[in-house]
Image 1 (cartoon, helix red, strand yellow):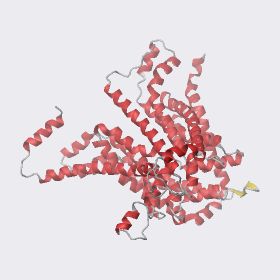
Image 2 (image 1 turned 90 degrees about the vertical axis):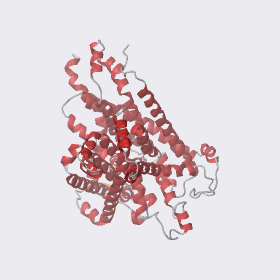
Image 3 (image 1 turned 180 degrees about the vertical axis):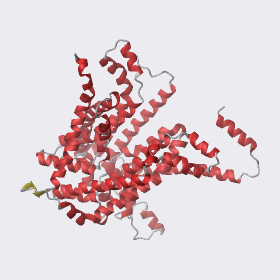
Length: 294
Length: 284
């Protein structure tokens, strides 16, 4: 029996039966925070619920702002709307390429900052935070100034360059957090058993930090596919999905945009659901997380 | 032979990412600084004239936008703190086994496009949308009442969009607090409020500070919420910078405004750090 349970029994045993007005008040008081949390989560999901609901709307005309009637048509017609699908494909390609580059570069920096002590480590540790602390509009505007003065045509490659730039810091910080709680004795053991540095890295270090790298890549992907502010400065004539949605929002957003938003949300929901399940499973299995070296 | 050069390894790891940041983060800022001091036009080209006069000129011309942006961002930061603290507190101290799920629930809405979320708020706050329209039909609100295109809609949009940046650092700092410290305070006859005020709150100040910065900085520079939810009267400095850069091609003026905005942010952050107190920050 836990200490808490014993304490509770003592309290219950001692409690005088009639005078329980204050305990009622206290019990009501204990409900305030959970109720608040429920309301706060509901608030956070409110626009998502609206987005999903209006993906089933059947608007007449361009404006999808009042409820007209339920339909599933939007989920079929979207595939015949290249004006929506093409920006989405562009966004996906930019996100995939920039995520891969940023994950590799950011992980290398994270490894350097946690595994080695070298001259200039402290200032670099600070420097890596700067892009995260700079307003997006400044990063976008200054990149525009650079591209204009160098004479680079703004197009998909410049978008990729910008996305890699702002994602490196996020990847580094995420990977570094994972590496901070890392047990070096495992690597030393591998070396003692005759593994060379590369084998140790591949068989011991990499599997252990892989969840951190994966989390960093997912974050980078999410930030890239959603970025509007920086992209708007460096896109030139290319339209990514956020740029396209913003562009048509003045005239009225077609319900197919809500359909795509809903699909993206469900994918993110699925990803996170899988993570929770695997986390639970890992927590319940008692096996120690020691990697095997073959 | 190779061993002699082992000290180079960390620098090799840093090189590609570091170069990327130098070329595409640091160099652009330098270019922007130089552009801000040039005169000319896009057609005829720019020439460096060391025109420092553009800075006072921009301050006098756009001071209203600066003040509005800073006020909006301060209100947004305060609102995020008020809304986010109880949420982070509940997850950290009362979350139990549901901790990670609750945290993911807080983050999940933000995997949907920023633009689509803001457009959804436009729908929710619309003059005759399902919220205000219904309230007006019942007669609770006057038919002329509106939220959209007012400062309230811009501020609420910013608050919604930046709330997770407040909740996450708050949660991290609250989660680290040893609950036994609060118990000790209670044992020493502190009321629940006193224990919170004297133990929990000071220990979470690092999270309060980090969260405030993460909300304040992007809020000052934002122009998306003001564009979608606001009116010409609620435009922020970000709107001006974006318009001068992308529509008017007034690069020197826009660059100067960008640096003035960064300077304003820096001054406010330093003042805030002063108020919060550095000794409390290191305690977290």
